[in-house]
Length: 449
Image (cartoon, rainbow, N blue to C red):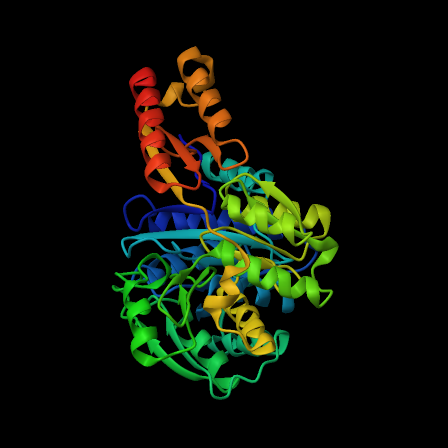
């Protein structure tokens, strides 16, 4: 059986790959592993996004939690970062989010946080998976008064809103902001937070019906938001994904601003205020080369990790960094929360607009985004990690690295989940790098397929 846990919990098509039975087993095994060592009756917080399958999976998961003698607190529809924060604040033994983030409605996922609000290590995930694959070997199923119970508390989302606005106190009176809530978990929290701060908020895609999450909206489909910002003559547009742990933005001219640019703007502002710990930002290898050039110019240290916000977070904890994230919009502000947080990212970005009085179009010039070309080569799965064993491929990569040295870069990365090798080239000329990426991907595909 393949590993259950991917880079961000257990995901699949709801009621097919991710069944109520699997959710029940994850509740049982997760409660046992995360709360089993406590000397009290453990309690696990559970929240979900707006998908129609959320109720089904959340109730199955909580039945599993209760069946091993743990209690559950169900907070309903809230952003993923809200569960991380509230789990820590209320001293829960663990937290669980039912969400598939930016994926279409038919998908769902289950991801765990420990009692400190951090995503689980591979070791803890493996322990949960072991119990499921071994039919809950050694797990006790109590009866009578020792069975767990569920407490329903839908008001805790207000605490997350309050925490967010108190973390970044702003006066947004007179500022018009368009938000795209992706018909997801931010439909209440982001709107409420910005209104509390006095903004004139125009919300789109904030009427979730269980079936429309991420449907041509949110951070993966920003065209409508770009047009609306210009039409409304707004100062900024904010695009969240389904579970609101990521943010992308749109400037007043209707131009998209990605996660790298947001981190560059916020990071430089934090450095000027003495809030950027060790003058360091943690990013992944997929961050634009322009980010590295910006960091060098601004005397900011850069730490790079492999792709995945969990790896960014691990490195941030290791070196005591306060800011890190991904180009896709997962931005972690570790002083205030333990995972990517779209709302906090938005408030920090707005703080720079307020403090400097500059429009986002000017602020985003802090870094030059170099053109990127990304091409996938379909290969035999057992060969995807061995591409450098083939001299013709190694020679072609070496020639491109020499060609783009100082003016770009070549990044080759086998997919973690698919039989593909990803070829990414950055440089000054889009046409040139696209042609080179296509040629290299074809060589890899022809050689390894």
